[in-house]
Amino acid sequence: MGVKRAPIKEVEIVVPKEHPQEELTQEELALIEGNVLITTVNKLVNWARKWSIWPCTFGLACCAIEMMATAASRFDMARFGAEVFRASPRQADLLIVAGTLTKKMAPVVKKVYEQMPEPKWVIAMGACAVGGGIYDSYAVVQGVDRLIPVDIYIPGCPPRPEALLQAILMLQKKIEQEDFKNKI
Image 1 (tube, one colour):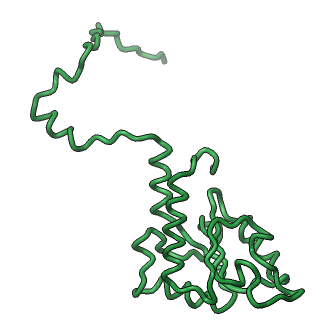
Image 2 (tube, rainbow, N blue to C red; image 1 turned 90 degrees about the vertical axis):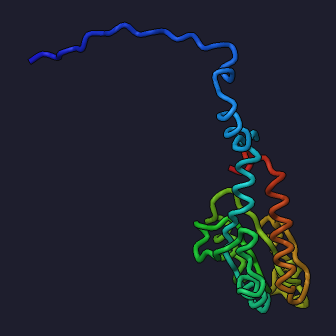
Image 3 (cartoon, rainbow, N blue to C red; image 1 turned 30 degrees about the vertical axis):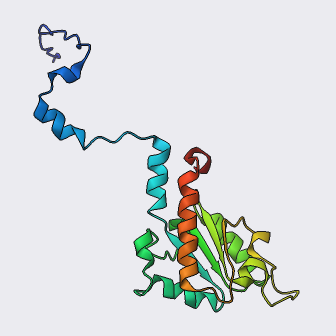
């Protein structure tokens, strides 16, 4: 049993013209005109990341109530691309630490942060998460940034839902300016 080979037909070699757009009609050019986008890969990736933030919540105290209110219909975080709170850090790229971080809970926050895939960002929400708040105690971590890098700080006790929305907008501006190759 042998292999049959098809005879090779002559192939016409087409030399491209110097200006191929001359072949298009005026109607075709009019159709293409509004549908072409010229950008860099960096801007395209940052645009996609900016509008698809997936937050993982880490509510530790009263600030978590304000964080939940931000996702409800009155404030509607979904308008800004941070639609669905993720229950798993493996599916999230934003960690919102809201409330008093105790030393007993510190290893858990660090573990959750380490489980998040790159690129990842952190928002410290509330006076306790930012700097320990009113609890100057041996049992309270005096700021989340002592454990993990924080991108945006939201002061207040507790901060209003509008403050969290403003922080998400600030984070979007930061994402827009990043070089995506450094965040892979």
